[in-house]
Image (tube, rainbow, N blue to C red; front, side, top):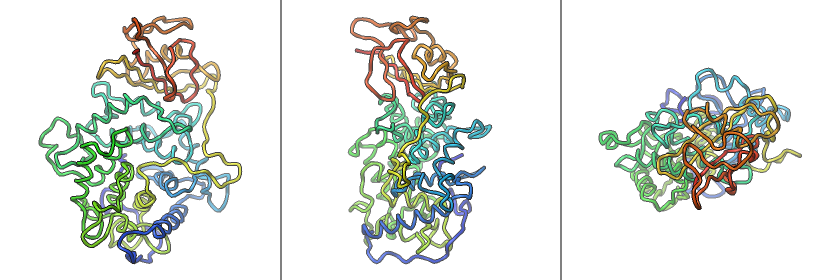
Length: 467
């Protein structure tokens, strides 16, 4: 499944309110207009919740991206309930769906996991600790392309690599820390850079190494997502790639404040572009993005919103709102990229985060493992499946189980191969002088790697060789 909200007018599902909104009186959207847009947008998205509390539908595009928009607009998913029934709150129901052994179906693709990482994070569900048997970060790690480091899933679907970087860079730990090593993000940043077209933008397909493809015109939507992935991955706004992307978007600005996408002016394309600017800390209402008539992309989005219903149209000629356009529009107007940290709930007693705190003995689980021997291009990433015998496991057990990890080749040898002592060699690289193997969990401090090092449920294990 693609991650884009809609690819053409025919893909849009139209339901709901039919009162057309007027263009805001002020050309540049004011704080009051943005606040109203957020409030009414949330009201509309709440109306999409099913009677069972769900936002996920079977087949095709679902409404789970609503969680990213809710968080951006300051609404906690646990506070979203059908008819006030707290037992069916959106967060609890979504977590249960993700934890099910049948999710995401018999033929999953990498974008299924990336979408779930971004939205579970926004919903206040730790994506690595959905349940004892569900670690979305590890599920994503299984799609690392060993032959093309930095890519996630088949490289021809460049979309998967962009959203892999967005997911791993954007979904922080509960404490707000980066859970994967920077070397891993840097590898995907390099892949995104290699696919930037000569016009400064990006498209959905792989273009790296193909001068003809790189010379083709870029897509507004994918440019927004790709530039966001660079910034989320640690690239500064002043970087040449980000500046080129900004200039590409600037050159596509129409007098209405919309971007001239390949599908014409529409809310989804504008939403993705604005989210890209937001993620990079670039003002979508600044001088660069104010048209000759004084309109900005945020103006355009708010003009696409129905009053008083709160839903957004896909096209300006539409007479009813689109769920997908409403998600993309609200998230962008609210100032977010492609996910947002979960707000503090207003429901009494509800925590900001929910997560499984321990393994269940005898229940198979997955751990994300990153192995870095310090050699450029030699990074190993995989999902390790093991069956813990207690509430925690050990680094030794993870390394032993990595012999059958996905993708293969992540760990080919470990010294010592038994016991609880210090790890002295991994994949043939042995401790020498001031250089040794160290381990960090969820981006925490690196310590000497021992087979006895405790590993908890959902921990992202990073092994690095160096001084």
